[in-house]
Length: 624
Image (cartoon, helix red, strand yellow):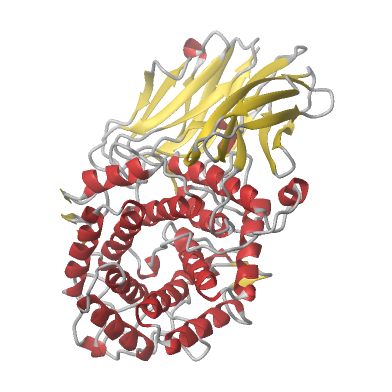
């Protein structure tokens, strides 16, 4: 757990942007989205994020504090849009994960119960998550849990360096993230507990210490923490989440006290963040680890979402048009530059070939889309998605190939209204999409649970289509104000050759399950998690094989239907250092299904010790 981990509380403080409607065409081309379109975009991205939620352990695999932030992001989404579909998942996490757990089960650290651990900042993130859930449900058990967490954290405030909360139970470091969280947490408790004075006093004490600690430098930017011993600012990296938490802490305390000096300090922090030498590159929020030649770790992937969540709070509080314009620019850049055909949002909000996509980047960038939803949210919205979003086709010689898609529609409207959606589909020149036009009627009952409908499409890919990526586009329209466009990206390929952890891997990755990808050539599955590749070999295939560059404790299984599995390779020794790394070839011919499709699943041969199979590179060959 690195000191820079300073989490990301993500999303949706919100901003009343885009209240004036623009034409559907303009909304989809770029720039600020109208209210219904902004709501639809946020819904699509939230659904993608929640597809990574693991309901048995009730978290997002592999990261304890990151899960707290991602769940708070979903809470913010629900609060902002009125959608309430994911309240059961929040309660599932609360009930299943409030106990005591050994190291490695839900985190690298042992969990002490009531969402506390030796990582004090992790504990605080869970406190904020349960306050958010209390705001959504008014169930006192969530607020009571937040109080329990705050009481635990309170014990780690002492007079070292004149005050402040320690970052860890070993009391080795006092830093910005832990204390920004402490101020926000205690001020939020005060603002929700009638007659409270205790938590207000702690919030004020924390703010006074933090602003006098030296961590806010002369440029108005927040350095990471204090040097142990000297109690001076260490001048370490200005992470976006530290800047955002300082803004958010001051805002919540301002709501508690209405002290105008707090708002003055907060606005200085904000102007420093977006001014020259701040945290913005070409108008887009950018983490320092995104610089060329560098990479962001799994913690840093979520930092910008924390900043933007509290920036939205700032915009809501001040109604400053400059702050609102900055939010609109982030949302537009995320949607136009940072999104793939599967609706996944990446690390680099300005896009680029070196982008990285996973559930952490999804949660972070989702905050920008939530920010574009006006307050109150529009009562009517319409969204569309396509499944599969990134299919692979390996055509046989001389024959056309058929691909089936399902277009999913979701709509909101006041109860009693109907939304009739005109659905138009198209593909590249020479391709046939059936039907290319149809209509669907949806009957929403408000915003809490969007109405759903589906349209099945059949796409015929002509024989001889060159290898490459091709788009199938669907646009759903209802009246003059509701329109949404979605696309599927079909990869036509005759070869299989890719590094894991890259965009080239995505079309072949049929089921990521709870696997992780820590950069290029580094996909692995620990414990009971796995990942599956699907190879739709041509219909005239007579033999096929796959070569995996793999190490550690792996199990490799093959299947012709993705359901029944046969083990074709296994590591029987407990290996943790990659010393068994090798390119291993497995014959898939006996396992090909009637359509000549082959599935390969990689799992962990010793699920109890956390060193599952790691794959670096994949190739597959076939003859026909």
